[in-house]
Length: 90
Image 1: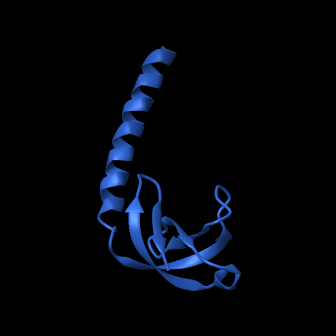
Image 2 (image 1 turned 45 degrees about the vertical axis):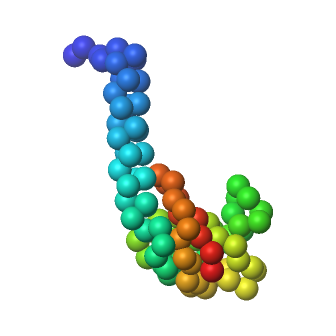
């Protein structure tokens, strides 16, 4: 069996990733302006000023919160989105 050359594999992967980013961005953009229920996991690993959690649809959301939110559901109004995450305020 002949193997696919690495450059072809890499190009295919890049096209697939670009398409997935486009789809994810469109789906997340549709949530901007909505208030979603988020289960707060804790302080964001990438930004100590934000907390993170997951929506009922298992999307990652970052928001300003406090320690008492950890382990609880909070309502977060989505203000902006990228392909892989939502950002909002409580």
